[in-house]
Image (cartoon, rainbow, N blue to C red):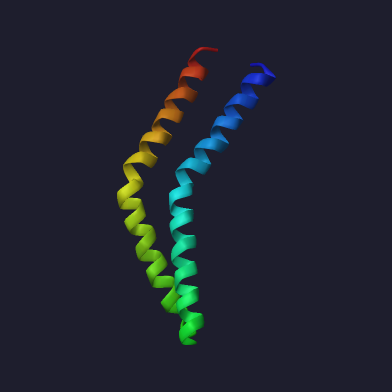
Length: 87
């Protein structure tokens, strides 16, 4: 196993991690920002007001983008197994 192959696999792994976690992180950040603006304007400082909408938004994102995430991780796993079997 060469150094360039290890670096390629690591780079692909980091890219896949960012692609798979990206939708959930972006949705959580946007919902958190909207709820924070709402709390600042109304001066309601309830902790569950920020937690529950984020949780619901993350679950909806998982339902909508779950197939894409699983497919991406499955393809990467198959790629890794092909590399291992080729050694």
